[in-house]
Length: 202
Image (cartoon, rainbow, N blue to C red; front, side, top):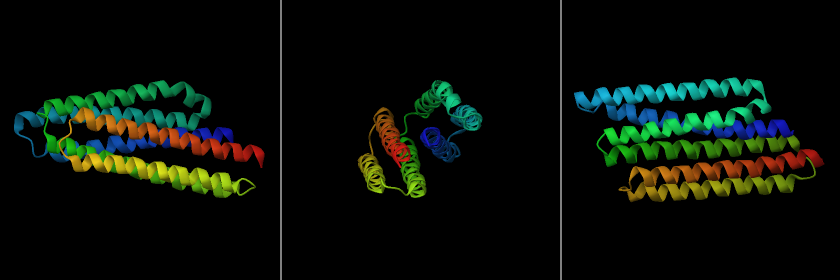
């Protein structure tokens, strides 16, 4: 159960990043069609680079998912490097787009929605895995699921508050997304650790 739980954790985290990448790309592509000719060329170049980075991340994710847990542990720094590059390129996009607040807000909303969806999907996957365990520790598993859902609600509330603020800089919005991402990883880890402990003791 330990390897399977760790794989779930890695997959949840990586899938959440890909969902964020897809949300950012969709937002950028929508806005790029509205741009003036000279800025559209630059935006198209950045979008192409973002797609390339997303595709590389996704390809590496697929390779590692097939290779097992040990490969994940070795690949995690490389995946994080790809993610950091994607985030840096998003920042470049915003800088080249003239720091358009509405674009930043739209992208933030799309990424926040992707994060919210990832939280709910992770809770659903955990619930399914916990149901398969059906043993003496169902109370612990139920508590872990409840905590995961509570953490998801808190993260969504924080992001919703920023969505409504409307005029925050990209660095503030990006920091909020990073905080939510970190909470997601921690909550997933705690939930899967509970499940792992349940498997060992039942």
